[in-house]
Image (cartoon, rainbow, N blue to C red):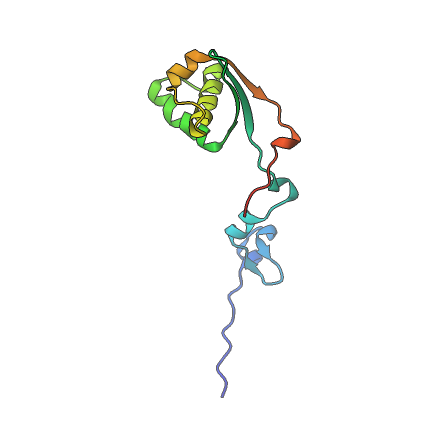
Amino acid sequence: MTAPTPQRPSYGTELGLPSDLVDVEEEQPRRLVDLATEESEDDQVLKGQRIHVELEDGTEFTVRVTNRDYIRWDKTAPKRKWGNFRDVPFRFATFLAWSAANRDGLTLLTFEQFEEAALEVDRLEQTAEDEARPTQ
């Protein structure tokens, strides 16, 4: 005697899921993690904003701004009542430069000291050499 074969529940299109979320051959929903990890060739390049800084003592450096710096702004600006980044674009750029420089160990200045010492804070155009391949 053989055990009855359980009938697989019908998923996907019968449940009204969009066809791009359903593996048609298997007729099962695709996992969100699978969708999130699908990469196109364009997704394989890490892009980052670069900012060149010149301080009044002659120190010059270029930093790469990452998401950590934007989050630091999001946490700091409301506490200090600086307003929206659109309202204070120069302070915003200076803060991002300071945050990246601080994170990379390029400055030990407080933001207020850095803000006073910064003669130039210039966002640089993205070039091919700015593109880095992510690590696995």
